[in-house]
Image (cartoon, rainbow, N blue to C red; front, top):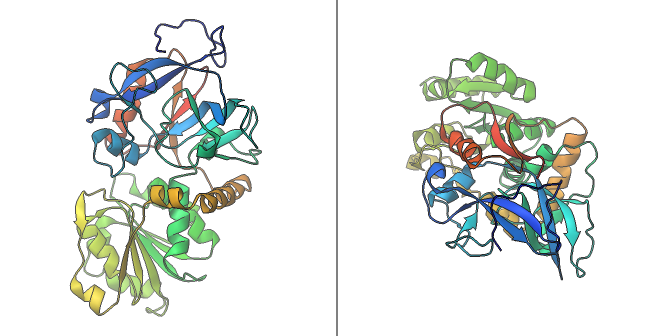
Length: 376
């Protein structure tokens, strides 16, 4: 049942018959966020069977979410009529944290007030409320000392960084690794985790007027070396690596690439023999370019990593990874990424929400956009 113009509200808006009133950012075709997103009001029936009714607390705006809207992402949620839109649609967003409002009589291990995250992608998290099967969520067992933004942003960037540092190269304390996109959410997470585990890092970022400030910031997180893309491209950069790595006696065993194009070639040239290059993004929208000699004579191994697939295939490992990262956060050993909060109340206008999404495509930003749900 669809509705508009609801003027009454409490923390979770309910009708006289136990229905929860909800709003969602939906799309029925692909294109730029400002063109295809619409704010839709609808009703959610009382929970039954194994169903949970959830109230979203925080949901980030990730690059993959934008790619889904544009129709360029490998997976796309199906367009359906589940939320009562005039045309079949999907709810945008994949990551977030929610509070359990009610449970069906078949739900075990979850009660009202519990906080949960999505077990897999494709559930649509840019909405005030959601009803889903209890099999689709992971319970956060211990929320003490944590904020909803910390929990709502743990599934993608920190988990990506954790798994890439752990799953591809046999890094030991003192070993080196190198990455581009070091100022990204994944990059910042990798710097911190790598330092906690005793790994040494070379971090590449795009040049900018405030580069020295950024360099200082990343070093405070635990980065050993921070350089610009221009420095990486300099002919003498390989000699600098040799100096940093004790004359080359300390191996650079792992490279993390989210850029592609010529930049990925330059990252690969930093690697030692038998090292691994893991690609998890393509910001340059260009293919990974490597000279054949790196594969033949240095025996570099190429990998791709997609955290969505890893999460779908390894739900128990995801739960353990999330719990470990959240424990590090609780202990003050893992710092939040910079964010730009976008408050979403019941009366927040569609244009405000759409502008927040579209704005992620514009130049340098001070932090990741995150919808923070208030009076919904």
